[in-house]
Length: 457
Image 1 (cartoon, helix red, strand yellow):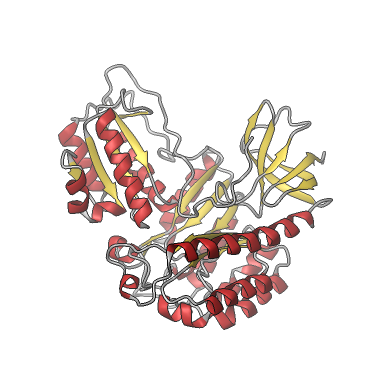
Image 2 (image 1 turned 45 degrees about the horizontal axis):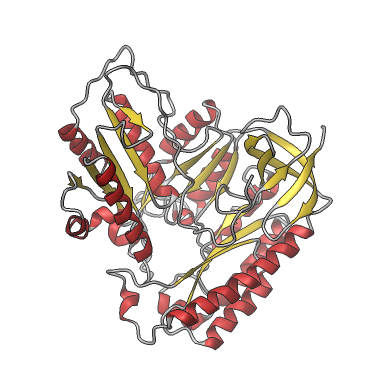
């Protein structure tokens, strides 16, 4: 068992677990999936289509006749990671198809790796399939290549990401995701619910609801007659009726988010909100072109906690944004002291090609960014440690993620997979399996993780 590292990048999805079953002679395609959970869902959809057309999925380079690399373009460091992954796939396999966010910059990719077979942009499923067909012709056997109703999943069987929309209407100066993925396009509620029902029927115990701006779900529909925000509230209520844990990610703090919180108090949705506050000083937020007003967020947090006292709040922040003064950064630290968020991640600002923030004056030196990041995380760690220590002696419902000879690794309702903490059971864990939900009494805490004992119910 391993403890959750404090600097885990919040833009990363869990490591993909590729299915390995194949019939003799079946054409095999490899997949490298980088980036956020939204990209992981794209990878799942591509592989689902490929499985339906008779392809098997190879877990390694050597067994694949071609490899798809689903790239990330969130930060320059993520772009470098994507180029490294493409280079590795070319060295190990030689036949590589590139897709994903970085695929929106084909010249950037082919300039570094001219031997790639094809480059497609994010959620361009048909173009990816066309490229695979050209590289490795399909060979379907309709009597053998049976596809499960829920499609191909790259996460453990007991949880799954549920993408409810694509794109974003915000124009944050540090972000180029809207340029790559387009404006907000919400999926029809019936399609989302149908997918969720299939996932639950297939054994999924936790649905992780994602999009670029989850709380804006449905606000792009032209025939809408509802008040702003009611579409996501209704969808969350319907998902909560399926019997699985429902966890909401990437929820911008619009005023109507308060209407989601009663669902958490009722137990329909997990008492957890992932809210990208990004900063707290009003001048910094203006330079970011952020939609939220910092002076109101503390009031909203207090309102949410009044409705649902057990709510867990996670957020991410950018330190060292262009023009950030020491006074602005201190405001962020003071705000964090007041907000007392449960889970916090932070980025040091990076220029990203095409982002408007690159042209802002007064960029912060790298050594100052690093120093502020360290101070920020020290503050966040102290808050986390105090909050977790307060849970010692309480009973928590947990879901089991994995079991090994040393014990069971679980998560409470306050913890999303990979980005938050764990709860470890190191005694009396015999018979537990991934996906089990049980009650645990907490008997020990660290800065990010908990330990506990099973409670017989």
